[in-house]
Length: 139
Image (tube, helix red, strand yellow):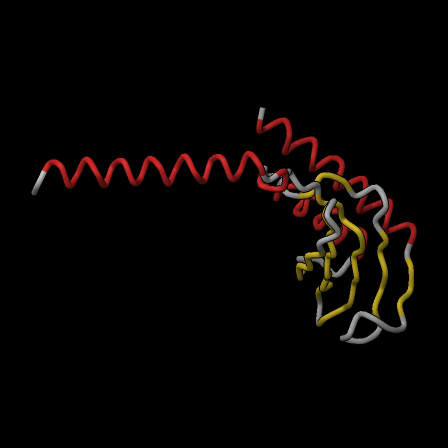
């Protein structure tokens, strides 16, 4: 292979790289921002002998993610403690301060909702303990 040809290819690659870097420095949105995720709502529904939970998380840029979990217990308190620990262990969610826990009567999770403040406290406490454990293991 011709060395002149290889040198010209390397020059073209380095010029393209420099061009991309200058475009990124001119574009203020090109820098990656860290998104903070917060647990917004937890919808619960009994399915067989377990509890199904749909967890809605919201980012600092108002993006929404939904995850479906099946808890290993039919007891709501035990299920929410387990769920809070599992969501915290993922490490992608930072807070659950304003979480709302609601029971759903149907499969749509959008109508006939019943708020449960006591379970909100259980979830919040389990999440906070779980997030502390996750942070401790990462240090």
